[in-house]
View 1: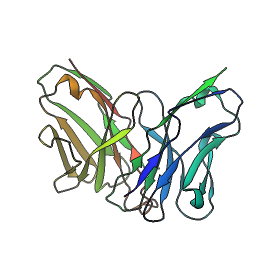
View 2: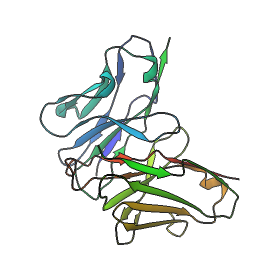
View 3: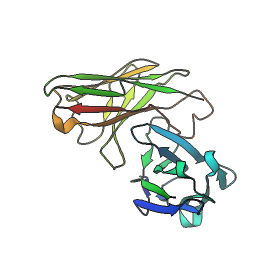
Length: 114
Length: 120
């Protein structure tokens, strides 16, 4: 079975500050890991994903995440927060099976203060 | 990239009526679609897996007679909330996997825009 834990349901940063959203996973096989962003009353948009290869993954809007197998983590970072980054962020894990859905974490709401 | 369209985006209905939500894959074939439900300020909870040409697979605790799923073609899945009640009010999101594309083995899902159902 797979699971995802996101530490911190709310994170608040100042504009221009570092963004760090934490995600730890559990999977019985090598996982595929995703970060999605959700704006109010909208669906989910893929920020970035780790499948295989380089463990530091770059995504859209300046976000990146590093897969650390030894720590079972996939934390999301951005060097400098922008007001437009305020949204809900979800970490998700997949075991790659075609007919299996993604398992999502509980989500982290990012607030960006001016 | 793969695009999933969901309709309607918002619907308000009276208690006891039925509401249908459509989920379409616009530029790829989706043999499998997933329906999620999201309560305010909470995560996405998987309701059911919709399989083209066969019965949907429901998660534990989801009433199959309340939430009817039909996946009659490779590009369309529908969710019908039957005899809706206020407790069914929620944000429903569909997603699909492009099983023939480059993401077919990674588990990546493409999401619709979501449908907010309000039952009065």
